[in-house]
Length: 258
Length: 307
Figure 1 (tube, rainbow over the protein chains, first blue to last red):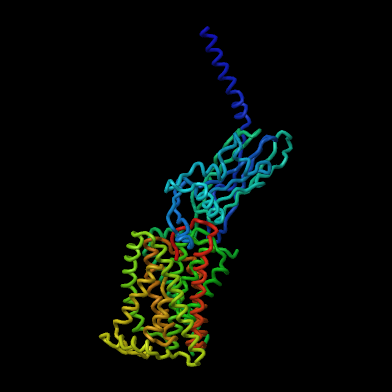
Figure 2 (cartoon, chains in turn brown, orange):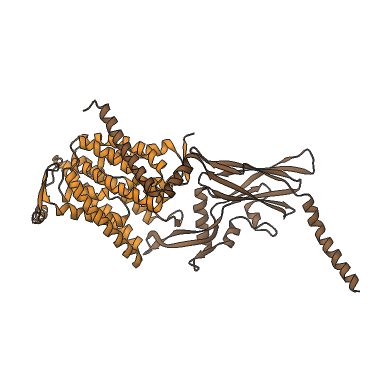
């Protein structure tokens, strides 16, 4: 009896693992190009391509997110019922500095709340973050936060942004997505997460690191401004005075010494 | 192609747009002797520059514009250095005092309300008074002369009682050295509380309370702004790391040219014409502030910092 029980348990475990091993067997190779975006003097944002082969009946969602942080804002409210002004400060905790979600045509933003969907989208972020003071109207304040970040171009949910092409092999298709990197995204490490879904369930999740790095003149100025701040301030002032004097001299020259 | 990355602001900007913006604000500085921070900072924020970086980098570019403007006005004999230095001494002392006052106000709460109301009332009073007075001047066709009324005579009698009187040759006036120090201090306090350079308050004070000729006021105001902004730039760079030199450089290339052109325009305009135009500018800023106070904002959250 005991042996039978052990056998049943073993069989149950093996049976349970079968679908997982089948999924692992068809693990999907995802390519991201480039892995490093360099910020030079003439940088005006960049692009990163994510692509791979997936089963013909699968869907892909891609999430680009920055490190979570706390963010403090001034809250606008009515004073004496008439004047709109900054009334208080409000802090959002555990909120990513950048958040972009790329969806295929088959999945809309409203589908993200369905069961078995990965925890992505603005509603998922709202669930994760907390507010100080705690008594704040979270729905309203979070909506304003999303408006502000969307206006800045560093928060977005983009529908129809993942495209598919048929592979030679009819069992698979190629997905492709072009991630827009706005110039406002600061240097740092970001995470690009690819969710592969089949029949509405996630079958694979893969994280890739995207590095954004300043080089050349921007890197030099940043290092001077932070490591030798006083010298930087004095230099900035002296160059401004020199430029002002130079323009004055040029203008006098143009007037023929008048 | 036309974009440059701003390492401190952490954003890229369109170079011709920022250059033009610098030129336009520089033009106003050259004509009226104001720093233009009250116009430049909100415009930079609209273009995606963080408020603290916008205000600090603007100070850096004003250093160039005011150097260029002071030089242009100096050549026309319009800078009263003696008066400028005394106002500056008062301004530094007043600014320090103002920082303390703002700390106390913040501790009591409702500071933002008091600051905004002071700002709007100040703009309204200064702009309104200057507008009416210069309009009367234009109608009477007696440019650059302050009408002598009974009220002003009593003020004149009062300032005559102050000790240490001295002659200010360029301005053509004789007043106590205490007066510019006191008035400079007052502007310094107000500027620190409102978080602005104070040019638009200093100019009317020089015209109406020190009774300096308008053209000398513009040049002397620029001379004083130069030193205030040198101080602000170095302080902001060393303590807050908010000066973006690339941004300041593009702005100053535009503003130094604009200010030279402005100085030429200023010379061609009469004192009352200058005053009425500045009054209109100040009143427009006030109306814009009033609208922003009365109309519900698009977004109920804002970043900290800026003017």
